[in-house]
Length: 155
Image (cartoon, rainbow, N blue to C red; front, side, top):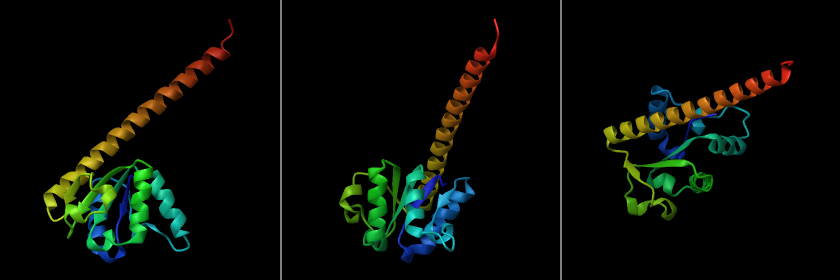
């Protein structure tokens, strides 16, 4: 499963791939349909599965994606699933974003430093969340092992 789900229009493939590549460069796993889907995948099921499992959703907001029904479904799903979410605006103003995401902070995708900083911050938050999850799992395993050892000792 991926840390980041990239929602985009296939018409904006070059831009989406640059975001995907940047995510990979800094150690994130990223789902980009045209790269991540394999021949024979049930693509609707795979997209839904990846959306559910991702920690973050990056919405590449362009005139093409803002008009795409498929992208609207993905974004609606991300909001319902309460995913951490960032919109990267390229060629659209805030007023052109779909109404249900206008209250989300959007990054100007034409500002390469802002985009770089945003993806880096996403990576930091993902790593922090993974560290916390790892510590919780380790504590649970330790607790179970400790309880098991108490149950096997003979008095």
